[in-house]
Amino acid sequence: MGDGIDQEVVPIEKALQMAKNAGLDLVEISSTTDPPVCKIIDYKKFLYEQKRKQKEIKAKTSKVIVKEIRFGPHTEDHDFNFKKNHAISFLKHGAKVRAYVFFRGRTILFKEQGEVLLLKFAQELEEFGKVEQLPVLDGKKMTMILSPKKK
Image (cartoon, rainbow, N blue to C red; front, side, top):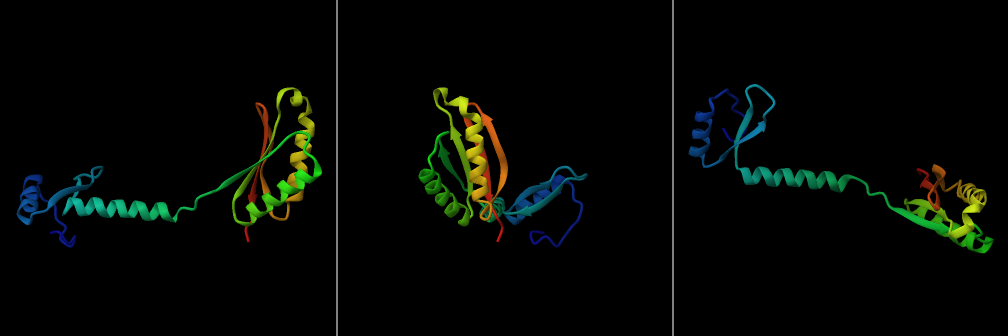
């Protein structure tokens, strides 16, 4: 009964009586089949096992970390190199990098300059990561996403 070895088609009333006699619960495993598949098991234990399986699946999934680096349209070479070195360390540690140029006020006129800056940034980081998304203007931000290269 409860060990899963016995498999027989039993009317629901008899199955409920069997579960009651065993001091366990009748749990519906699959309702889409005809007749529905049920098991006589301890329901709390069943819920605990389900929760544990979900937790294991969640633990096995990898978490993607995204680091952001912000530029202005007129970022100087020293600042550019400083931010580039940070991006290199982020990519080496396996994080994605979202680089963006933020245009304030009238600096939106320098869209081309912002795009050139991001493309230069991608070119400098070519050996550490690959471009996942090319520069795209979204409101006052021009964004580009880099992901680390596989080792």
